Amino acid sequence: MWSILTVRWVLGLIFFMAGWWKCFELTPAEHARQYFVIGFEGRWIPQAVLQSLGLTIPYVELVAGALVCLGLFRHLAYLAIAAILVTVTYGHLLLDPLYDTTSHIFPRLVLLVFVWVAPMEHDLISIDAAIRRIRGRRGA
Image (cartoon, rainbow, N blue to C red):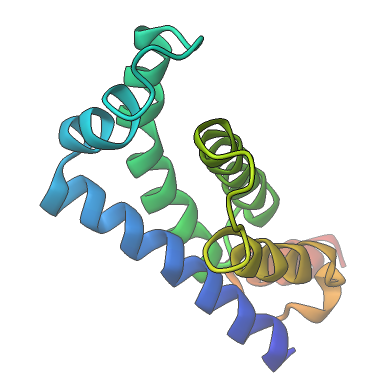
């Protein structure tokens, strides 16, 4: 129970704080410009797609990170984080086919897989678990 909570909070904070910085300090527009539009100029990906991804990812990180910490809509939040990790991995590998994923992507992936495969009934300290308990009492 405590191990799942701890890993869930570490993973959630990593994404929440990245999203916070990108939304409120860097700004989503600057994130899109610096990390997507400029970085992938001349590649096969249309600029509109790059701009959309760059503007969207900060908000997804912020919301998904918060949901993971709270333990609310966990599977949806895990799916969102997985999509970000796949996108970021592809982007890095497109720029550098031998990009070292061990320092940035892989640790987050390990945390994600841990909480995603952990049995839901063992993650008791979450809003989802509280909702299940309340619904269980109503049905009894």
